Image (cartoon, rainbow, N blue to C red):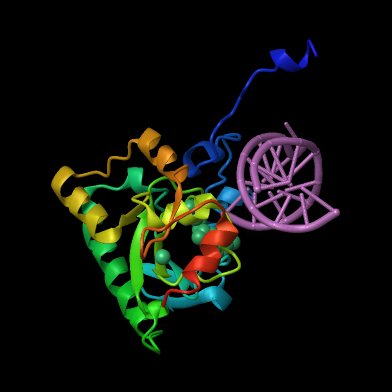
Length: 210
DNA sequence: GTTCTAGAAC
DNA sequence: GTTCTAGAAC
Ligand SMILES: Nc1ncnc2c1ncn2[C@@H]1O[C@H](COP(=O)(O)O)[C@@H](O)[C@H]1O
Ligand SMILES: [Zn+2]
């Protein structure tokens, strides 16, 4: 009883920033830590769906919707904070080819044909990546409140907005505290704004939308 | 008793 | 980020 209460709380949030603080060695190239998984995944031709001189698009390993891909620059850029106005053409290109790739997947007239393109305000994995995700959100990998809120609240930053901010301010400003709060937000349907107490209830509901 | 979430993982 | 699972919530 006396020992438990005195334990120091080193409750560090797990983000792309704080994760790779272990040692001075180059974890960047994919030293093994889970937060560097994308640096090796992007080299794996079996998951690549598009590649050119500037960027590569891969299938997300744990898709949160029927269609979910990640677009990454070929040069290593850690995250949004590393961006400067010099990266604007690159981000525009990633958005452009991301849209073209998504359009090829269009089939019926349902919500899996509708896409959003953007960045998580506070990513967990390093190597800048733009999500390309269909708006059906029908996937077994979509399980937690954090998953839901990271794609349906303003925690999901539209690529257009990121590019605009970069053009006007020369950098992307991310004040983390408000974004952490968004992740705790009540589960809300992205279509009808209905509120739900649990993820299973929410998932059951969104299955009824098209 | 079962469903569901939330926090540790060295 | 995911996996696993203890215990909270129902
Ligand atoms: N090894 C992997 N290969 C491809 N995608 C991954 C891998 N590990 C995690 N992901 C996805 O990468 C994204 C990282 O999320 P975030 O850092 O929040 O932008 C999530 O959508 C994961 O499903
Ligand atoms: Zn709804």
